[in-house]
Each structure stands twice: as structure tokens, then as C-alpha cells.
Image (cartoon, rainbow, N blue to C red; front, top):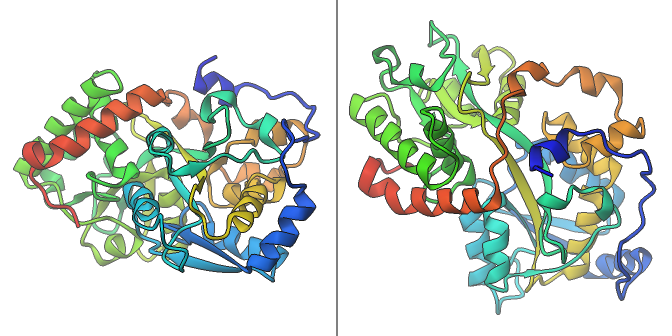
Length: 367
């Protein structure tokens, strides 16, 4: 079954959750050990991303004995993996216990021996094609790439990728990350390539790099990492970002300026983000407890508050545990009908090509 079919099909209603395999510790033992550790170290979790601020506060409220040490909230997926790699022998506060990375980064980190397996108690309700069978990594939420537009500065709101190349968008378009390290930006390149008709993977990467070269040569591309602040300041009037980020920025800015979030007509790419525990986690029990919280109904609803589709969405809807007002707050489904969920091989091929080719093809130093 394809990833899209798995995610969009109606899940079975048998949502009573039993761990699929016996672990050495019970959940009660994990909780007790985590409280003794007393700290959880995270990395690259901006509070506006998917309502991470609310999720972290929910975890701390449930487990007040555990402090959350938050490292570098603006880091990208590659930075997270490097933080594990660089701190293998470091049990101090700079060593992350857990990571949240783009889909293509899970298998590669696992192959390096950087991740340890752990299957949460809700394991059976996570679609099979977004998790490692042995529990080294598993999908947690997803969204689609969109255009986040400052309507106070952009008179004609672009509706598709080809529009962004028009002269009226001079010095206006930015990515929401460095395409040499950020999963969000790396996939922005592939989505642009897909809009030209290229197949997801290496072909779309090549087409996307040429697209951004054309944009850069035309003077439309802004080599600044786009976020709520740069949009509000006018430095990046149009940012290519996950829909949930754009919607959160819209709420955060509260009409000053007025933002519109547009799902493009073509090249609609859906991206799944993964959770994983470092093989060298200084606080492994706190890491496991964090995973249990994220994949509980409470944690999954936290993502939905931030406009992200939680990976257990279908199971929760089938069991009637998603409040109607939260469903009503989601964007209209029509814009997502053509979303493509690339395979792991396609994501890996794209990431390798974009990271290797950005400097030589596009030549814009994004920072």
C-alpha cells in the first residue's frame, strides 16, 4: 500500500494500544527512571513549528520532575544528526537525547549506528511505511509545502511555482531553510522540480536546482532563511514553507502583516517528519517517555493544534477522540488532493542531489 493510501484510508477502530513486543522495562519503570534522570535534551524544536511550544509545555506539565533542555531551535535536520555524531562520547547538556528530522534522514542515521530502537505503546497505529520495522525511527506528523505571502507587500498573490519566476516578484522569494542542510528547503527544491513535470527523486532535484538557478539569475530569490520575522519585516515577502508553519505564522502575526498561505496548483509535495532516539542518549529513559507522550492521543492532538496532520490521525478520528472544532480549523481538503508522498528512495536521491548541487548550480549562500 502506498504512503498516501495508508495515511488517507480510514483506519480500523480497534484503537486499544498494546506494545507489539516485550521490552525490558514497563512504562511505569521507564517513567520512574526518567524522573531520576531529571532532564530531557531536545534539539531543533522551534515553538511555532507544529505547536511544539504547546507540546513541550504539555510534557512538562505531565512530568514536572523532568526539565527540558532545548538546544538550537533553528537547526536543520542535518544539524541534528551531526549533533549526535559530534557528541557520541559526551554525556553533557550538548548531547541530544532525541531528534525530529525529515524522512530521508532516518534511515541514513540508522545506517551510521546513531539511533537506538524503541517501539512506543501506540506502535500498531503508526502506518507501516513511515516507520522502521525495528523501531529506530517513526513518522509523527506531516504537511505540504506552500507559499506564505505577505499581502501587504505582494499585490498579486502567486498561485503556482511558475508565477514565482515573474518579474513582479523581484527580490521577494525565500526558502525556509538552507537547502544544504534543512529538510524543509531540500524538499522545496524537489517540489519546484516536480512542478515542471519531473518525477520525484533525482530528476526533480535536477529540475528544481535549475528552477532556483533561473529564479536567482532573475533576481527574484532572496538568500535569507524565511520565517515569521523576516516576512513581517519585508525582507522575504514570499516564503516557501510547510503549510503548518505558514498558518502558525499567520496566527502569530495576527494580521500585522496580513498573510495568505497558498497550496500551489502543481508540485504539491507532502512531507513526513520522523522522531528517533539517539543511540548515545545521556537520558535514554526520558527519551522513551518523551516518545510515549508524543505518540499518545494527547501528544498527537498537540500537533493538530499547530495545523499539522498527526501520523495517528486516522486512528484517532475513527475512535472519535478528535474534537470537531479542531477538525474545522484545518485548511480545506481540496488543496491537498494532489499531494505526492515521495518514497524513502526518492527522498534520499533528492537530498543527495540537492546538497551536492546547490552551490555549483544555484550559487546562492542561504543564511
